[in-house]
Amino acid sequence: MSQISRRGLLKSGVAAGVLAATGLPVQAQAKRGGTLRVGLQGANTSDTWDGRTHSDIFMIAAAHGTVFDCLTEVAADGSLKGELAESWEASADAKTWTFNLRQGVTFHNGKAFGADDVIASLEMHTAEGAKSAAKPIVSAISEMKKMNDHQVQFTLESGNADFPFLMSDYHILMFPAGQIEEAIEKGIGTGLYKVENFDPGVRLVVSRVDSHYKDGTAGWFDSIEFIAINDNGARMNALMTGQVDVVNRVDFKIETLMKANPSIAIQEVTGNQHYTFPMLTGTDPFTDMNVRKALKHAIDRQEMVDKILQGHGQVGNDHPIGPANQYFHADLEQNDYDLDKAKFYMKEAGMDSINIALSASDAAFTGAVDAAQLYQSSAKGAGINIEVVQEPADGYWSNVWLKKPWCACYWSGRATEDWMFATAYESGVPWNDTGWENARFQELLLTGRAELDSGKRKDIYHEMQAIMSAEGGTVVPMYANYVQALNTKIATPDAIGNLWQMDNARMAERWWFA
Image (tube, rainbow, N blue to C red):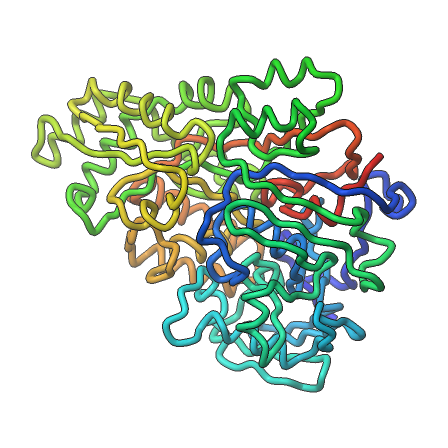
């Protein structure tokens, strides 16, 4: 059996079990019991169980990390393992993939899981009128064939060395065939926890499923409560006063105060999360590459890392490939803060000054409004007058992002380069938040996807980062570490996932009471 590792190379072997950093099985350290209470930012009153629409941590953790399962799962160490798929095999050209499904799995309503559910769940993303961020992943599949009740074969339009990784995407949840509408309405999945109560944008309560296929390896809490607390101060206070056990996105302004509390532990993980200011390149003045270049040289990145991240991150270079990616271009020339260069590109655009509105909300990332104001201050000397528009947190992702010409945003990054580029920068994909087009970039994207030689892939992805850094419509000022906090009575494995917040959004499965 051939599998693709995190490093994109063919290797032999089956998916590994859940291990702590010590190498001991997790079940040797963990124990069952208790109710985990989690205070989370990123909830909206428009939230549903439709995985195609999920875009922030509350529903990502609630769905793909608690109530539902995917075919594959990215482990805490970045390796890939099977979830509802036990194993997979690839043809020599990585164009045909055969997935062997786990047997004996049932949905929360008692329906048995099988090949029909996989095909129906994937077809959701390409259905007429469907608005799914995973559409580019699924639309690349030219044929889905049921080999038997527990085996599915996928034929891709072109080879993709990362395909098994893509099947772990949090949008691609497994739903019961023939009952998808009901499953979206009630939250019916195959996950470790079943829904007891769900009030969108407010609260979720789930309880542990009995006789689950992950028994003994994950799912240690008897029940879990997710509480939506979008306000940073209120969320931190909820942890410090014992109202919740865990919070995401630590507010760096009060981090010192939190560290002084002996019952609180700060957890920091370096990953590929990056904060961005995307411009709609089909809207003036962002249609002009010179304006985009001027904006890239008018931002003081180090100041943002120092003041917004309080040092919990590093400077970005206007592309989305992070320091935890294999093919990160560490030697790429930096877009530096240089007002003379910014003025030069302004003149190339035929302008001495410009007035631009920048929409921001802390829903985008903690400190986004402050970051926009720093940008406003640093750009002023180049004749770039930025009006910071503070947007409401609720509805930010549906009313501002992808709609306002220039705004604040964040991305968790992805485990592979192609996954990141294909999600947000491939031509025509739903989450291309700049609409930027570059023929050479798109050509390299397709070439790199099918390339199995690691050296050649490195050259391809380095060139793509260089093109985007120079010409793209996204300002990426900084990579941000994941910083979350928990009560010391909560125990975790030594290795914490860095693909998404909160242990790859799977703290409900992986953590336990000490």
